[in-house]
Length: 493
Image (cartoon, rainbow, N blue to C red; front, side, top):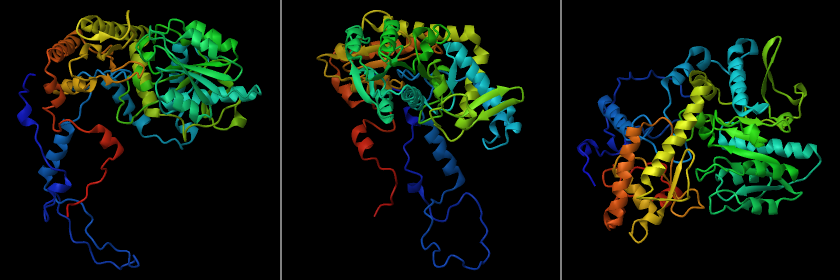
C-alpha cells in the first residue's frame, strides 16, 4: 500500500475536556453584580464543567475535527443504495432566501402564500414525473413514506370492510420495508429471490390469498437490478385484491425514464434527499413524499395544500377534505427546506436533465461493473441499473474478508462501499457511483480496487487485517461500540 504524503498533518489530540487549563478563557467576563438569592437552596455548588481554553486552542480543535469529516465535497462516495450525489450550491442558495428560511409554520396563511405555492408546485412535478394523481407531502423520510403508503392501504381496506393483514416483502428489501409493515399492524411474509436476483414470481403468486393486503417491492431492487416482471407482479396482486407498494429509494435510476403509474404502482415514496439532490446522511435532513394511485388518493394523510380561486390554503382537518384521510403523520406540513432544494433541482435540470441524470447513473454503474468484473466477482449476470453489486467469491482462500477489503480501502482515501447488504448476497460489496462522478474519478477508484483485489489474491492477508493504518483511529470494534457506546466523557479518578 502506498504511503500518504499528508500523514504528518493528521494530528492526534485529546478531547476538548481533557485540554482544560484552569484560569484560561477566550473572553473577559466581568464579575457579576451581587443579587438576591432566589434559588431556595438550589444554587450550583460545583463548577459548571466547561473546559477553560484560550481562543486559538478552541478554534484549532474544532477545525481539526472538521477535517476528519468525510463527505461528498471532498472525495468520491461509493456507498450503494444511498445515492450520495453532488449537491448544487444553487439549491442551498435558494433554501437560504430569507422569504423561505425565516417563515414559521404557525404564520397566517395569507403571509405564506409563496411557501404554500412552492409545496404545491413541488407536488405537481412529483405527480407529473411519476404519472400518479396524488401525493402526500408530509412524510419526513423514506421509512416515514413507507408508513404513509401502508396507512393509506390499511385505510382503503378498512373502507372496503376487509381485514387483510399480510404483506409480502422480498428477501432483498430494505430493512425499513418489513419494519414499516409491522409498525402498521401487518404480518410480514417474505418472498424469495431467483438466481437472477429478482423476485420469484411463482413463489409470490403461491402466497397470494384473500388476507394479503399488499406487496412491497423496490424497483430497481436492492441488488441493483430492474424487476423485469414488475407488470406481472402488479397484475397478480391487484387480481388478488391487494395493493402494490413500490419502495422509491432507487428512483434515481429511472426518473424521467419510467412513469411508475404505468407499472401498476399504488403507492411509492420518493426520497427527495436521494433523487433530487439534497444533502443527507448522519440522520438528515430528508423527505419522503408518497405518491398515490387513484384507488388510494382519497386516503392521503393531512395536511394538504389546496389551490382555489382565493389562493392557497391548507386542509388541516378531515371535515375540510373531500376524501377519507388516514390521519396525520407530522406536526406541520413536511420538510419545507428539502422541498425548496428539490424544486430548485427539478426546475434547473428540467425534464431532459433529469432523464439524462438517470441515464448517466446507470451508465456509470455499468462502467464499474464492466471494468471490475475481471478482478472482482459480480453477483449476477448481465447489466445493472444505477448500482453495481459484487460478492466475496474473488476473496476465496485469500484469508481476506469483505470487512478487511473495505478497511483497506479507507487507507486509499475512499469511504468503503456498502458491505454485507443486501443480505441475500454473501459478502456483498454494493457500489453506487451516481451520475455526478466523472470518468476520471471512476477510473481512479477502479484502479485502486483492482490493485487491492490482486494484492489480496497474492496472499497479503496480514496487511488487510491490519487496515486501516493511516487513520486517526485504527481497526475499531464496531460491534461493541454499537452495543455499549460511551456517550459521555467522565473525568479520571
